[in-house]
Length: 88
Image 1 (cartoon, rainbow, N blue to C red):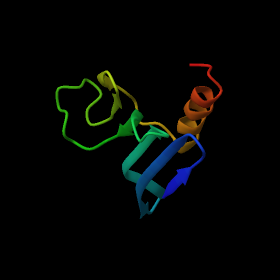
Image 2 (cartoon, one colour):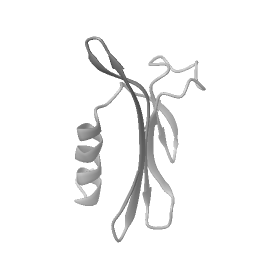
Image 3 (cartoon, one colour):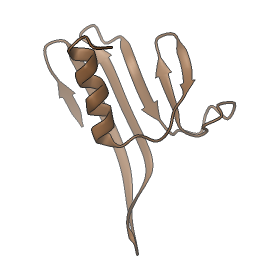
Image 4 (cartoon, rainbow, N blue to C red):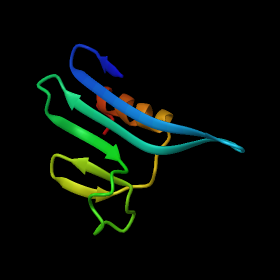
């Protein structure tokens, strides 16, 4: 799904699997860009950075890769809100 306002873009993906106990999130990606399509951040669990302590979870920033825990979708919105409001 794509969500765009006047100055930013959020593209997100979650692959969910129904299990006997509920729903399990197997894959995710939350990619947030500014109005010029420049990366602000991206959280994902693609297994392409085994050197990260929190593998496979990690966060991409314009300055590089950092450790990250698996966030809930609502947490991503809180971070976006802080960015848009200039709190971060």
